[in-house]
Length: 144
Picture 1 (cartoon, rainbow, N blue to C red):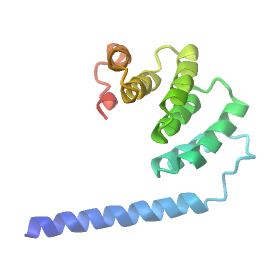
Picture 2 (picture 1 turned 180 degrees about the horizontal axis):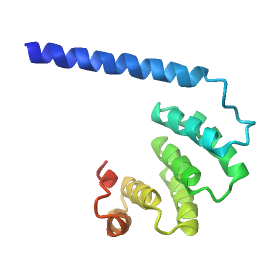
Picture 3 (picture 1 turned 135 degrees about the horizontal axis):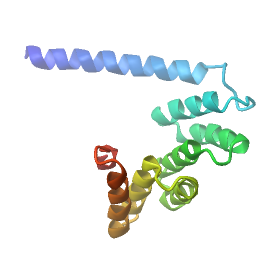
């Protein structure tokens, strides 16, 4: 019984922290879409993506890409946000753009594999996961 209570307390603290973090990100006025700071725009986009606010995150990735169209992180994260919205075909287009710039970008390889798997293209999916693992055998994010 004590173990269950301890787990509930830990989960409660985690959820409160997550909610507070989300509110802080949502209210953040420092970063806007007008800035030319691609790092700040990426951080805001990633924070919003991690909070499940994919449409909002995409706006920040678009701002980064307007300034730096070859930013493989922004291309990949935009693809991930689109995939999280269920737009797997569209997400693959962004992974392909990232891979055209950096064919060994593991996150794009991994994410493309996941998107292909979600489309039922399992053999192609395995191919991309295998490419990621060939580059870094310790890369385990593909199992998500």
